[in-house]
Structures are given as C-alpha cells and as structure tokens.
Image (cartoon, rainbow, N blue to C red; front, side):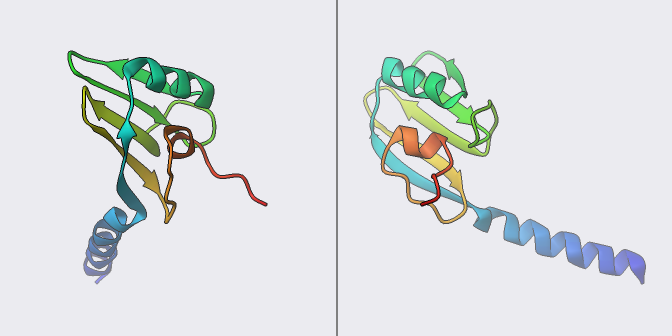
Length: 99
C-alpha cells in the first residue's frame, strides 16, 4: 500500500512541476548585453556558436531557476518560476523586490 501511495504522490508532483515554470519571449539581446545583465544579476553566462544564455538562482547566484536563452538575431526566451511576467532580461534573472 505504501508503494502505491508513493507512486501516486510522485505522479502528482511530476504533473505539477511544469506548471511551476513559465516560458516567455523577450526582445532581441546581443551577447554583450546579456553578459552585462548576467554579471549584474550574479548569474553564469555561456556562449556557443550562435546561441548564448544566462542562468541564475533568481537571488544573485548562478543557477537554473531563472534563465534567458538567445539565438543570434532572434528574440530571447526566458523561463522563470512562479507567475511572474518579466519585461526585460534584468527582471527575468532576478527576483522582484517587494513593495
């Protein structure tokens, strides 16, 4: 019985996990602009041939809770946790401040 209960809980968590993250589009951003925003947010910048990105823990350290991925000449994609709607790369890589 415990095994069945554990499987049901794991299945529920697996189905809920994608709902915790949200993919959104951001304006085109050059590698230099993204690196500057990434450094300011305390994230880790990486760059390939025509792809570049940054990841943070949303709290000033490298991680994968808040990410921005860009392809040269195209809009960037961001993935953030929760129901946030960032409008800029800087907002996407950091936690919003409470008012």
